[in-house]
Length: 430
Image 1: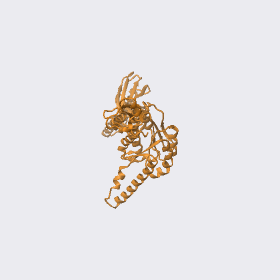
Image 2: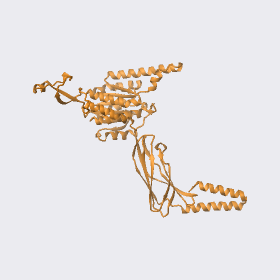
Image 3: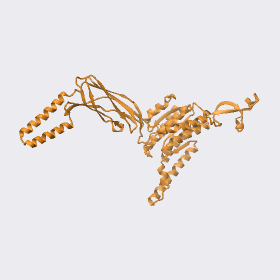
Image 4: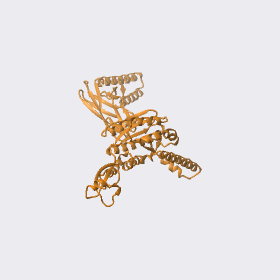
């Protein structure tokens, strides 16, 4: 049973009558009248046992975007259902409206649409649907929680998608599909064409030219059907927040842009997410579904507050990549973690594959390094300068092993990683 605000107002009015007459009889009459009115309301309220509820709608929503969930209520009873419906979602789901009124005749169906604007990634499960059936007087009603299971997977926002047209235009230039074709060296032979003034003489195909009365040169195109293995470090370093988001979220956004670009370039992309154990794997997915598969796996990833196992990551890469490929390790350039974790394995990885390390830089460190306002700021600047020097030093040690480094703030990491990929592709170094 549930009492409404009208019942409270009726009780207040009865109390005023009791104060007016100031007798035990008045108290008894008022109490009996209120109780009888409530009983009548409960008796005439529609039964909730004959209700059937179900949900439908979006099963996946990108973070920051909206999705619609439709609740269908079927009144299989014999009385009109008049009351309230509360759709139970956790606060991070951003469900609107939280409550809705309903007037449903017997034997009919009604739908209620709830809009979700989630603020966190992951799976969001709906709670029970709370239905309150009110009597004709609106004093009291019956209330019941009805199960209507539904789960919405909140996917990463993929904010770096805005950079994709620009990177695709550069890719078309490299691939010879754009009007502003750049005649450069790739690594896969494309075709022969007549020599024109300004061409590199090293591209002349003397054997083909000898069979014709013209000088022919070889044209090249970027390599296709290459393999990229993205390794996401989900250890404790990925939990740090830079620029309002975690390093893990910034890395995932960059990985999504790289995946979308590589698929358009005709390359294959795999994903491994790991810390002390492998958290997600997308291996061997087709080019049409790989971006959706990676996005779906990333949705439920969370940082684990333990040190990552670089040995496990390297073994995972070597187990899925038998032939040479581009390994993109998205981790933090923490000197201690790199020296003790990655450096002992980087020689083995770089001997078999091209390795690129992408890290999220904190722009606040650069701000601190330039501050000289007071004594405290000078000490902060010294600490920040030391951190920058350590970061530069560990990057230099990795480069000596042939590792490419992309170190950029969160908002620049995705386009910088895409540019590094395009540069390697143009140079035929994948």
